[in-house]
Image (cartoon, rainbow, N blue to C red; front, side):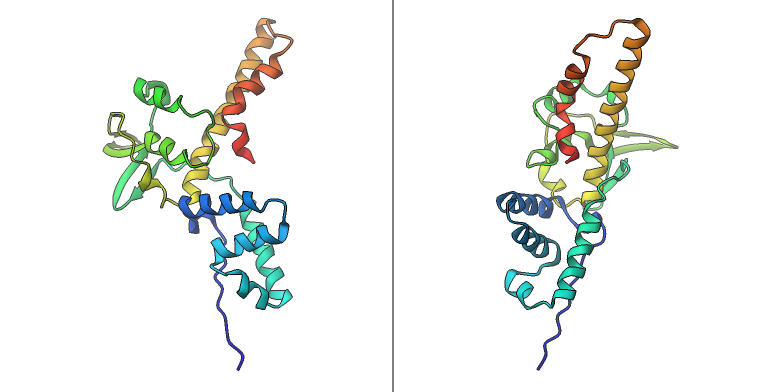
Length: 209
């Protein structure tokens, strides 16, 4: 008797938590030199399909799932979500980075790379804090007190995380453009300006990949 198998293939990053993403990336890095193994990792983490089951799939089904996964994974550009809910509580993104508490700046500066890795949820815990007040389009969040609670962000979906990371990438690019424009206007462009900007951009640029 032929056995039916139902496979759920995600089409958006909102279906993938940070915890699942990090486990998947770790396994992908382990098998990065083997394309077949990498897709087996994707099938396992994203579709809950293990290797023995993959081997039973017909080539048409396997190729269709493979294409669907490749298509949705290429899209990691999402807008910053100012508000998110975790366990029924509303959290807001730091409303004014220029007025961020000094302690938050110091703690963020401890991370060599702003990229989605094992330390990323700590960064999110600094930037997203419980909302205390909303007035029209303005809002306030809890004052940063140095307490980091990263675990709660492991279950937050990747659209939120990609949106926050994309915000910093855009901020970096805008800053670089602004610096170049200012230096051109003043005529004070160092000969190694591109090297300088590239070095300063190393905080976020690796995360684009």
